[in-house]
Length: 294
Image 1 (cartoon, rainbow, N blue to C red):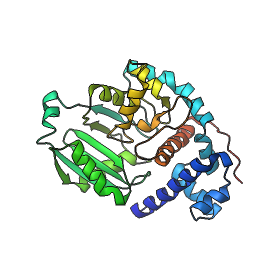
Image 2 (tube, rainbow, N blue to C red):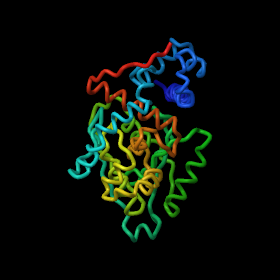
Image 3 (cartoon, helix red, strand yellow):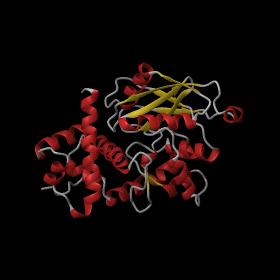
């Protein structure tokens, strides 16, 4: 599939998910959702199934609070256990082991002076991303519309004010293809370079241990980092995550099952969660009742 087609597919899926999120209590029909994205029900179902690996009806199930509560019950204790055991986060399609190396105090004070960051904009199943690399690892992955590219670059410069930025799309494209491949043929290991407070890095490390398709609450993460009363501070650290998708802040939701916020848009968070839930179901062979869409 071409990059242009992938971008168009996600744009329509994102519109559909945003529409569902706004009108979920009214139980929109398949015809209504398809009409909102200017497709026939047949073509919308085919597009959505190709993108998500499941039907729109089943995907709706993944977005309900009831489903979220069920997964929270299954995975909340698992997060604490994996954090204590120090296991890496499992992945549906390949073993992805992420190591991090935080900046030293001297490097932090120098604000990355002398560091070279190569960057590039690339299509993903969830819209365009800005991927940033250094010799020590991935230092940034953000999502944005094409019209927001300059703003994304401005934020990257603010995050690394004394680093040298270079366009390096050949290198970043290869990494992006590995990160978002749906059927990788080889195992890949990625290092990340993080800059943040000790507490933020501790939270981000905990996020790496949430299994793909799993959900945990902010309270679960707070308990996992040894500060059970710091849910609000955890929310701030989650929201400051500079490496989307790879450090899976999208898997953290509210205790009651609500999706919570997401710095790259609620529709994108729901797209990520539904996409992973579909693969989780396929992996475990678990049947999920479909909601009625007429």
